[in-house]
Structures are given as C-alpha cells and as structure tokens.
Length: 434
Image 1 (cartoon, rainbow, N blue to C red):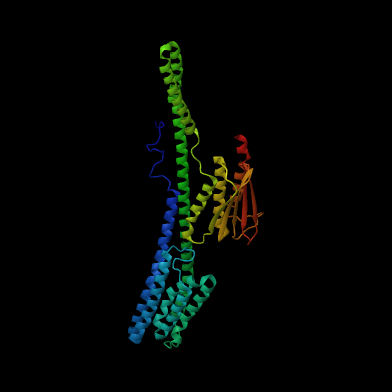
Image 2: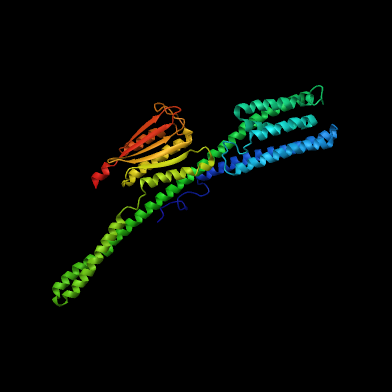
C-alpha cells in the first residue's frame, strides 16, 4: 500500500522535475559538441568552395584577368580541396577519434593545396582571400608547433601576394591587416574547435562507461531478484508441502498400528510420502542456495570486454587477461572485491597511463589469489601519485577496499617506465569455514 501523504507518483518524484539521468546528460553533451564541430566544419567547406568562385568573378570583372586561366585556377583549388576533404570525411566516418581531428587532413594534401593556392595568386590577387579557410587546414595538419609557423607563412604570403603578382606597387592598411587579423582569428577559432572535439570524445567515452555501469547494475539487481525469489519459494515449499508430506508420514505410521489389516496399504502411503518429502527437502536445499555467481575469471573478462567497447574512440590500449594456476570457488564478496578493484585500475589506465598495452594476470596460490595489472604507460612516483579528476583518491580507496577484505596492494612504478599494481586476497578463510 502507498505510504500516507505520499506524492501521487510511484517513486515520489515529480517526473517534470526529475533529474536528468547521467547517461542522457552526457549523450546530450556529446551530441551538442558534435553538432557545433560539424557546423564549424561545414562553414569551412562552404568557404573553400565560395571564395575561389568569388575570387574568379572579381578577377575577371574588376581586374580584367584572363577568364580561362582564372577559371582554371579557381577550379583547380576547389577540386583539390574536394578530393582531399572527401577522403578525410570518409576516414572520419570510419570511427577515427576526434583527438586526431574529425577532418583528418593529411600533410601532403594541405601542402599541395597551399602550393596551388600560392600559384593562383599570380593569376589574380583576388584569390588571396582563400587564405582564410587555408589557415585552419595548416593548423590541423601540421600540429601545435609547425602549424602556427605555417600559418604565419601563409599570412605573409597573403599580404605580399599583390606585390609579387605585380598588381600593386603599395599596400593599403586593409590589405595588410586583413590577412593578419584573419590569422589571429583562425588561431583562436582553431583552439575552440579542438576543445569541442576533445569534449565530444570525453562525452562519448562517458556515455559508454555510464551505459556499461547501468547494464552491470541491472544485471546485479536481476541476480539479486532471482536469489530472493528462490529463497521465497524454498521457504514456501518448506512451510507447506514439506510439512504436509511429513504429516502424512506420521499419520500413516499411526494408522498402520490402529488398523493392522491395512498395514501394507499404509506402508505404501508412508513410503510414497517419504520419497516425496525427500524430493521436497532436496528442492528446498537447491532453492535455498544463493543464485549462481559468476567466477572471478568471468568477472574480469566482463571488465575487459566493456573497456574494449571504447576502442572505437581511439587512443585505447590493447587488453589481455592471463590465468595461472587452478581456479577455486570464491565467496561472492571476494569476487566483487577483486572485480571492483580491477575496474578501478583499468579506469586509471584508460584515463591517465597513456598506455599501448595492459595485461591483467590472475594467479591462484594454495592460500591466496593474486591479480596484477601491468601497463606500459607513463608511470608515476608511487610516493607522490598524480592528482587526477578523482582528486587523487583512487589508489587510497583501492587500498581501503582491499584492507576491508583482508587483502593487500603493492605498486611498482616510475616515471616513463609503466606501472604494475598487485592485488593479493587470502582464500584460506573460506577453506577453513568449509
């Protein structure tokens, strides 16, 4: 029955004011960032197609440039851009990470396009304004150091092109400041664009992790529900059928003494009831057992399979699970302890290690089980662990979890030499209780 004075909603929460689920919020963030990035990308495509056309029309109508040569120059710039951008977009749709750039311009393509653009400025200085979208391409293609240097070279060429083409003997203030201001604006816009791409990656990764966590929680709740239902059925069978069959056995014994002429019939009733009582008790024992638990190996493979779903996001290490020794059954809480610890360590490798490879080694010993998580990433000083988004509490919480379970944590790492974290959990306590 509902609680007195409870709100008129099943969970007591107004659906119009209910908080947005984290996965939905992260998905919305990823979609927004992707949309903004796509808008910026589309604007650059339009600029690279419109500016050659406008430049050609201006060169022919205002400056009297040869129409055929001008049209060929504009068409050559546009075609080279279209060919390169189509290849970049195809590669981007194949699942490459935004960290490398959704446009994925190749250096050779950008260099060829830049040379063709420079040549077109000799046909007419009206093509100088193609430099504005070209600024973005050189920044994306050449990286953080070479990109700004190339940007400066392109901007200076755009300023001096009218002089080199002998179309001007002097430059106006607008012809000087225009390309330079455009270059500065491109630097700022490029930084914003990069930020959007990285935010898209982070949100997409968060969505995958949240969905995996929700799936794991749903599985856990399902297993808990199964266990509770089995326990309820076992209790009901014990309190009804088993007790009734036991009463039949006792009544048949008493009746056989009271009615000696029907001893055989009452004996048959007793034997049948006894057999069914044994079946009922066996069923009660089977149902009363805890719901089937996954093994530690299965739990670790689940951890790995879920992080492998992030491979499409790029920059993810390869994962491997190794098993040594003869597996033994652990208590559910022991499996959960090592599973949660593995999830925490794997998340650290993903976020901070910058590793190309990570190996989880599970080893079974006579009185303990050990799990080593080894990566070839950046490494760190164990005495001064870096403070990440979790405030640097990840390792402290890991130690606390293992301490509560009677286990231990060892860390072997150094800057530039990767990291090895060892987890040890005693198993003798379970064997003593058996």
